[in-house]
Structures are given as C-alpha cells and as structure tokens.
Image (cartoon, rainbow, N blue to C red; front, top):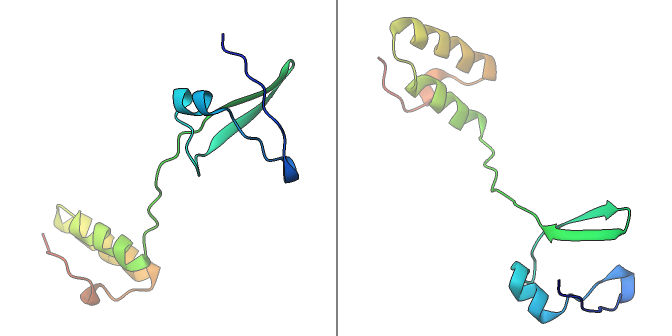
Length: 95
C-alpha cells in the first residue's frame, strides 16, 4: 500500500502526488468520484461517456428512416407530426 501526504489548498483544492496521479491516470481535468467512507474520503477515477442530444429533426429522421413496413411508416409519420415537424421536410426513404 502506497501512502503519501498531500496538502489541502484554497477552496479545498487537493494536490495528489505525481506518482499516484500517474498510477491511477489522473490528469488535469480528470473527473473523480469522492466517496465518503467511515475511515475517510476515497477518490477514484470516474467513467464518463459523451452524451449526444438529438434535435427534433434528427429524431424525425430516425423515426422515418427506421420504418420497415407501410404500417411502421404510417406510425412514424404520425409521431413526426406530433413532434411538430412536417415529414416532407425530412430527408428519408419511404419503405
């Protein structure tokens, strides 16, 4: 078990010793999870995944282009209209 000391700075900033940063992959801007434990605070790397937010037009494109049968397509048309988009303005292939 490696034990090192660190100093708490202004506003609670903690400088993690370089060898521990390298060992655990902490880089500038890394996101960490700070977990309260009975014996103290546990810091560990957090896993973050990019999140894509779809515009209403992109959602409409997905709906229309994923329709396989005429029934699917009719349902997709209604869903796109509910979003408030004219299906004719979305580039897609009719099944």
